[in-house]
Length: 340
Image 1 (cartoon, rainbow, N blue to C red):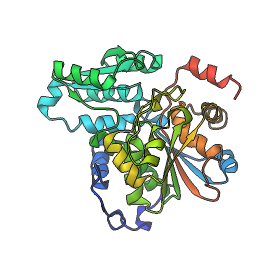
Image 2: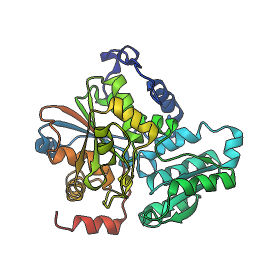
Image 3: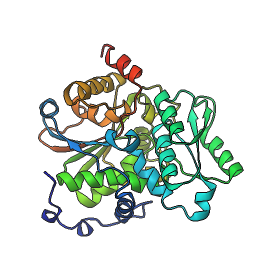
């Protein structure tokens, strides 16, 4: 049953912008208006077995069922929809391991502009194929020896294109925050919100929505154990850079949080925890066997933290963003048949 927003205090009385951050809740509301009728309002699912395992009431926001199979479409379309006529003619460039690439490619096609995507050679084949299918041009690079940001900036300058990074951009962050906005509007206030963390675009947007719509909610980010750059950064108080992490969570193989996203994380996120690749596989298997949905490894980060008992959530109402479902069928089968 959809939560009745009239039963809550109006969000403008709940949210006080007490510091200067890259985005505020008004930006997320504006993004929601741009996305209306374009992005899907994805379902929120519950599962008795998941509740029993965690001892909590879990609400899964299924962004694996979003257009292009991931939340990334929200931020991509919101950013591109703000281009003026000249910028649309020049087109958009981005760099991404896959989901943002697909999102930019589709958003660009819908808005009638060219798109160039810089993708790692080892990105999942399905993500490369779908990006091409949406009409984008792809330039492949080696993520272990080449700097994608430098390559992207050079190509954007050479071609006169506008660079929209995967996460460190206010319009991208605001678009991603609409996922949590929808979740809170449907289920009401939560005690905890678990969000996967790569570069921080999703969690920063979701944390701003949480501050507005459920101010007592603790926002907790979840990273792979091998790639805890944001956890280290939050502990030290400044951005930490790590080597490219070796993890099956390809959407979280970032080396450092964004400059803008980290500011929001520092002020709005309570904690960052990590999970193992083995825990991600167990969570993927749970979703396939118990809930009959496909969630990619990165998308399982928040769920794994809950199902593996890595966060204290017993007796609480907990939202979990399932960020994406883009995994090759062969890769999915291989992962699910491994011993975990």
